[in-house]
Structures are given as C-alpha cells and as structure tokens.
Length: 135
Image 1 (cartoon, rainbow, N blue to C red):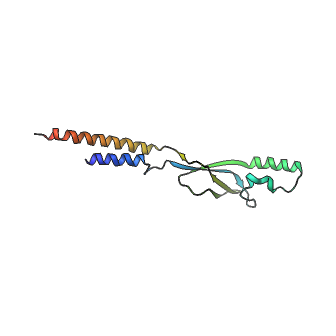
Image 2 (image 1 turned 30 degrees about the vertical axis):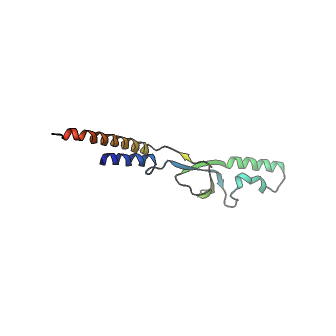
Image 3 (image 1 turned 30 degrees about the horizontal axis):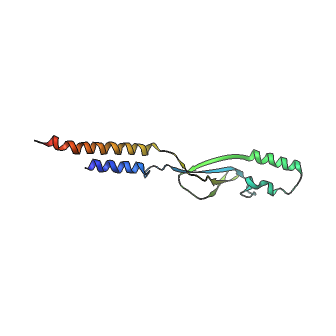
C-alpha cells in the first residue's frame, strides 16, 4: 500500500508542477535608455523633438532605430507590469508580455512516470503478495 500511495503522490507532484515551475513571464526591453531621457523614449521620442527641421527629425529617427536593440528576459515569477534594470550606458525598461509562457520541464514528466510506475508495481505487489505468501 505504501508504494501505491507514494506513486500517487509522485504523480500528483509532477502533474501539478510543485517541484519544477513551468510558467514563465516574458519581459521585453526596446533598448538602453540614457540617464537624462524619460522611460518612454523609445515609444514617444518624436513628441520630445522641438525642432521642426526635417533633416534633424530624420537624423533622430535613424539614431533611435540604431539604438533600438531589443532584449528579452524570461522570469519564473511575475514581478509587475514593468521594471527598470541598470545596465552599462544607462538603464533598460522591461515590459511584460500579456501572456505567460508554459515551458515543459523534464523533471515533472519524470515524476509522473515514476509515480505511475510505483503505483502499478504497488498494485501488482498488493495483488500478488497473498499468492506468494500462501503456504
């Protein structure tokens, strides 16, 4: 009976992901923000240009496109809608993707497999034990 109970517990722990997390949150940063710039500089940079000269606007457009170097982070826990991380040359603003990702972990599958195996062997021993000990 112990083997059946142990197998069920192993299977349940693997199935419910109690030991290995499979849910991750993806955070995306568009680029490095300089220290004197606002956090939304990559999405609203055109609003901060006062000069209406077309050449300067195009130059700023090229500069912002060159500075746009996306960076992604997968986090195993939700730490908010966005967060700021200090990096070399400034800081990065990371915003969460709307959907969380599920990335299967092999450890959970192994727990499920071992749980089924233990439960089946426990059941087999429970059925065969009276026949084997019969005298």
